[in-house]
Image 1 (cartoon, one colour):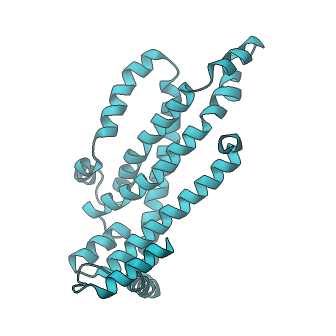
Image 2 (tube, rainbow, N blue to C red; image 1 turned 180 degrees about the horizontal axis):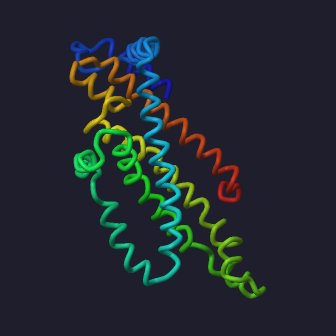
Image 3 (tube, rainbow, N blue to C red; image 1 turned 45 degrees about the vertical axis):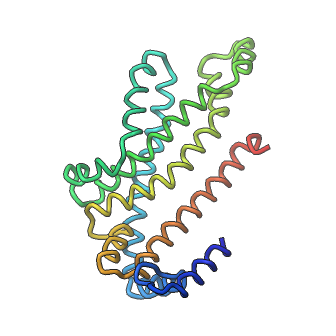
Length: 237
């Protein structure tokens, strides 16, 4: 990563036309200048609130729907075509409609984040439950375990690594959802900062917003890797 930043810095310094690019140091200077005025903190806080709300709602909803879909073949047959179709729908196509439905306040962005995070969680939860080792299920059942005990002791621990993988995928998608929602209508947020900077050709501010998003994604993904190692150490082995 350090090598990439150095190459980026050197390339940006020697480009004949730097109107459309900013080096990491220029982006850092812009971020510091924004932080001194308090503007950066305001944008980060708005985007963080939108992301956390949308992500949390999507995580809970996705896990519950994923478990529900695996509960019976009839539910799976009804739900899966809808899940596959909605998952394939590009969020960029419905973002303007979402802004019209919910306005430019926080809930339109929360809905966009929810809509891009929930489907990876549903699909991974369903895949985790369905990939549970049948031998283990039969072994536990032979000792008289109830369906609830089988789910709690075998299916859920087996699916945990899949669920965490879906939540980890949702981080990047959720950050994209925040930016997409703010590009189409917002008064604050990192996406709004990026759009405003692009319109005024202020590349250092634009890249400052991008770097903050990248750092947030790297940090949260690393935290999920640590959580996965703690919760499912057997999967790591």
